[in-house]
Length: 118
Image (cartoon, rainbow, N blue to C red; front, top):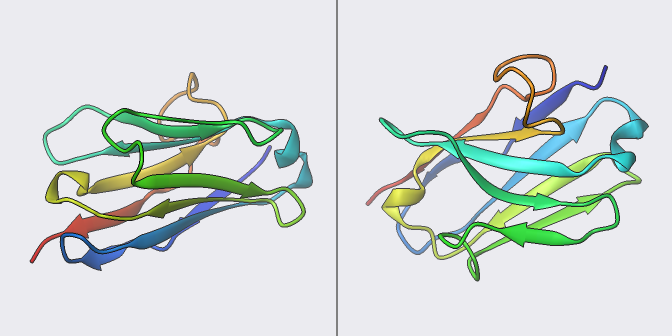
C-alpha cells in the first residue's frame, strides 16, 4: 500500500503561483498514473490534472495553460505547478493513484489547502 502526502499549499494573491507536491512512500509509484483533484467550498470534487507513468499529462479546461503537472519517479513525487491563480482555484487539493477508490481512503492523500485571495 502506497501512502501519499501532499504539501505546498497556502495563501496566495490572485495572479500568484504555488507549487504543490505529493510524495509517495514506495517506489511502485512509478507504475501508476497520478492524479490531482480539488474540492472547493460548496463544490464537487473535480479532476485537475493527471500524468501517466510515462509522463503524458492532461488537464481540466479550467486550468489548462496555467497549471503544469510533472513527476519525478526517482524521488517518488508528483508536482503541480500553479500559476496565474484565481480565486476560483481556492480548494483543498488531493493527489491519488486510484481515483475510483473511496475518497479519503488509503489511496488518497490528506489534502493541502490552497487559498487565493487578496
